[in-house]
Length: 305
Image 1 (cartoon, rainbow, N blue to C red):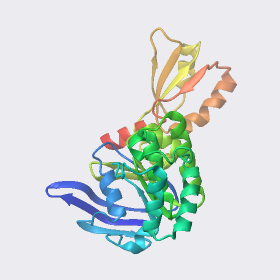
Image 2: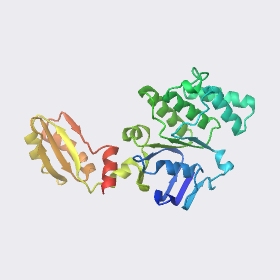
Image 3: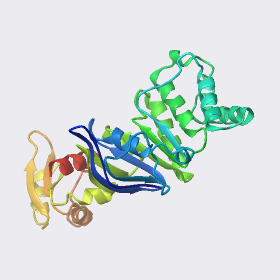
Image 4: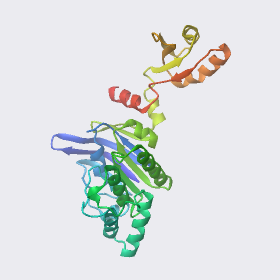
């Protein structure tokens, strides 16, 4: 649905996006990067607010810049609010439906249905100026969904949501993606992304570092030793047994703690061999964890590589 070919965007001497090529299809895809990585620039190119300096951007095979034909199939939640503060949430969403071209009756029906989906039906008649940050985020999503677009882009949509609201918001995005929509969510918070999807695009300083499934991206950094922590009441025996595995690079005892810290190469092979070793040797393990088995370490390794 979305295709970028060597797309770049410059702001004078500053590069906002640098030679990005990727395709995004149906499902939920996270656009991950630190502040200033180029996430918002990429979204503005996709939504047709900006034209690429070089390269091309296409939605459904069409140039999105100032193209109403594309906008009919596109929903967008910007990070920065832009409301008519004196209107109620219901009035605002209904107005957006009318601007999209729906009749008054159809706009009213869609507004009611969409406000229920985003959990704002009971507060929709209050003035937007008195809304909390989380309520404003839900209204932004409602206006993006009102015309049932095939593509929805959300720029930092979880900001300001409480934990319960965050969970419901993520579930709703998952439902939309499962129904066949293309959902693109930008975030700089790694654990949020892990809760939403495994399909990622990692941006850093305007460049696309990696794209694809988290597990595939994780495999890109197998050249780095993978840290593993074993909790055991017999750490010295565990060290003696684990040292025989060919992919164990180093072992270290944790002072004052019944634990053993390892560095291993080819972690999948290590995890495959560990259960057999434990069972055959009667090794007692109380815990197994890895600080490298998360998205934050993946991002760190790819940035520093």
